[in-house]
Amino acid sequence: MGEATRATAGRLTPEQESAWERDGFFIVRGFAEPELLREMDEHVVDLVRRNAAGEAIAPAFVTIEEKVADVARNPEDALSKLFRIHREQPVFREFIARADLLSLCAGILGDDLDCFLSQYIAKRPGALGQPWHQDAFYFPFDRGPQVGIWLAITEAREDNGPLWVLPGSHRDPVHETVPDPRPHANYGYVEIVDRETEDAIPVLMQPGDILLFHSHLMHKSTDNMSEGSRMAMVYHVANSATVDLAPEKWGFTPPNVDWMPVLRSGERVPVDPSARS
Image (cartoon, rainbow, N blue to C red):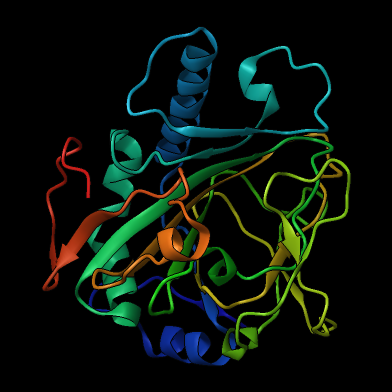
């Protein structure tokens, strides 16, 4: 369920189209090479250490530290999430601009695309999972869906806090939520409690696999019960005509959002890091 082979040309394969319509997600195995994954992880470590040393890195990215982390020997050991790195940081910008990746996204959303959100997730041993939610809850836009791209930097196993998804829930509206009641929950975590989830399945991935998923798909992650870290790089892509209604709804634009054109009329857009929308 949700499985598909790698697309070598064109948009979506018939298997991917079927999985998207039926389940709200599909996996492409072996999409990224090990060297790229190492480069991404090393770059995050460098950014976090430079930031901890007081170096000004502009425009500033957004970091969230793990609230239940023990005393960290290095700054990166306490990192939970690092946001907004898809424009200025070349390794992350180049990945979201890959023609084969944009072809997959265009097969879902059309030929005019923006990347508006990115986050590197570092799930350290003992880190808490995130309750059942839909990403669309956090995206008060005038249209949808959006596509999430989840790149496995390390293996995602059942013991190290992988994603769990509820196939078919992408057809649901955005559910009401309650705040995550756990005392050490990350900022902004909410939980869906009005939906049965007995059909949920874990998304087990090898380094380099990618998961593409619908913004209404219900998903969660579990606690990391292993002795190693579970890392992932996540992007979110929308149709370029999307209007962000956060200022009207919430009175502000979330600081982790950065709308960057990546595709226009089916052609990749050269990114100028200094030109912010």
